[in-house]
Length: 415
Image 1 (cartoon, rainbow, N blue to C red):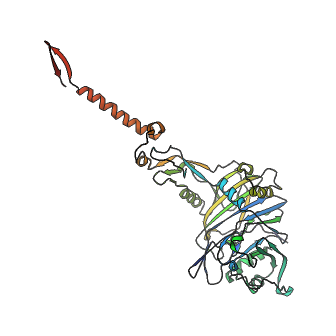
Image 2 (cartoon, helix red, strand yellow; image 1 turned 135 degrees about the horizontal axis):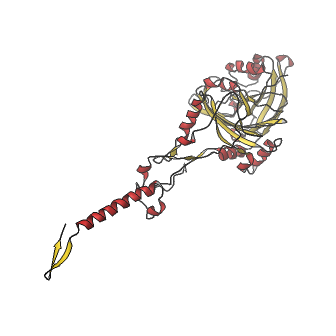
Image 3 (tube, rainbow, N blue to C red; image 1 turned 45 degrees about the vertical axis):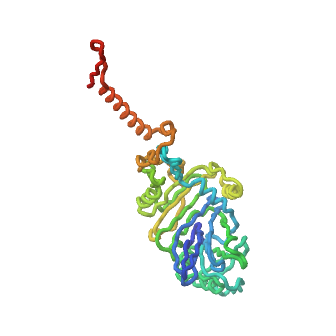
């Protein structure tokens, strides 16, 4: 049986219905209950690639009625294992690779600091399955994974799979059928999660999905189901070297154009990020970090997940890829491959261009040590003041009357 790669599926990040806001973030397919208007915000995932095993971490965050939560992930093999992961893994790996922008110039005297210095659908219903071999759906596995009910399904007919889900209380929208057909044609099977009876959304945790073998294709076409507008995607790849998307553009933010606005204490990084995606025909992934995984110094529960990632990779290397892409430009499944550029990429960036710096210099009055603390542009400002002061003193001395003794009397010769 032919196998396709890792699936991202759909994430519906903001679901609005009858004035109630519900949010869901995950890389599996998230389907909204019928009648709800859905939009896509973004999601985060981590993947570890080796010839022995592929591991995918997916962060699931949802707010709303627990019975409305359903997560669907197309996977390449029925030999899939779903485990709970720890939130700390995402938190530490994100914090350790997120771009940090610092200004090249020192803070003005008046500035104390210059630091910027799956499917969510209608659930509920009968938790029993009452499987019928004649319904065209194969149930490979059922399990309880922490707060989730999990089932792994296969089918040859997308309508049969759709019927199987809806008859058991999964309110999957009918618009999903073409996407299901696309991945069924590629011999995918589907992992379906929902909250077990009695579990609330506060019990939700990230999941870790493990596959045998090397599988580095993400079915991004599944993302567009029920989505519109711009989608934020963040992907961390753990492999033997730096990785990139083979069939999408790869870009870097132009650090030479980084500017720091001293009036707002913000940089223009986001604008440069969007420009980098646009320069790649609006379908590029930006490399924001690349270094050995060990450089992050993950600790606690996050270190345990890192050990899973490195189990089959002797010297694991981490690449952070991110994009903000219009749904219309997600026209191919994402194929990951080793990057031709193997150099490290630092997430620590310097903004060498100052904006509104002069307006901020000692605007509220310099502290007593302003002249001592200032340097760079501040020194030039103070030097100008000093020069004007010296000129004024010299002119005053030239105008000072000169005294002379004439015949025992003192006279003044003013000039």
